Length: 323
Image 1: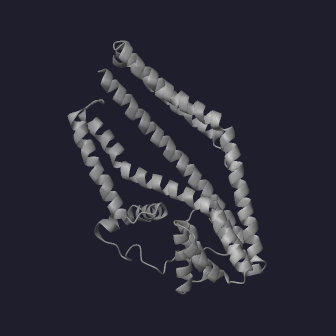
Image 2: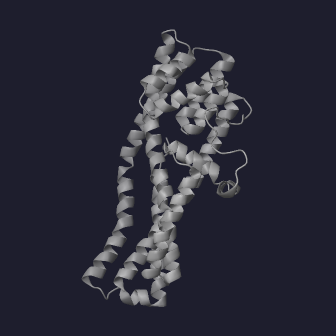
Image 3: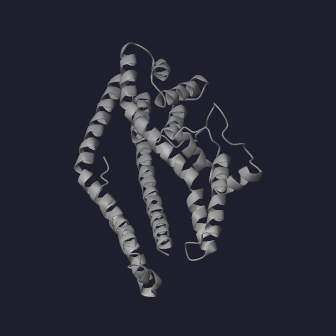
């Protein structure tokens, strides 16, 4: 019985944390969308459909499983996530991996019904294990975007120096793609190849923005497009933009150091109740059994979990300072 209570509490706690994380991602995506609209307004150009000259990601008229995914509006989202994570997967492969991971969860839940009953346990474990491939993609995407963000000031300085030396912007991009390390070097090579194959500069840059969904990349694209329309010294603009990005990194480091106490507090307050419960179950196994068996005790346990989630959520909102 104590083992079942521990596992039930841990699974429910993980599911609630996952729901809160998804909600935060949704609000962050909406904020980024608003920022993109502001940048497009600053550029003053109508939205142009994104096309790729290098390869067709999906057939024009998908059928079968591809058609089902497209009807659920999952294909484009999954393809963007996989592309930004640097994984050479297809949306079908991702969904297949998620489905295969759900099978052990169903079997384990049927054999060990530690939650309310066998079907409930099987469904919960299937959802948790089925989300593992998607969470892996999100993790790889986050790490890759962090690396891209670190490389971006160096790339802008390279472009500025190359243009001061007398090279054209397209030639500077080609040299940058050859000299810079991946993953950003690969993205600039793709940008140059698209333009070299005949795509207009604005279309190639917008495709670049789709592959590199960073605020710094949006500023870079807006700067190049504005310079194309109004003229000016692009090398000086890129140098100043690189300086601003580095200063923002420095400010982010200061904010991270200042909020370290709050992040540590959030971690301790989140982990401490779970460790306390496990310790009580080890030291006094019968101490919490009565609460878990009593109807009012179950409501108290549920209230404690909700209070933990709300406390963690509000602490994260306080210390999560956008720079």
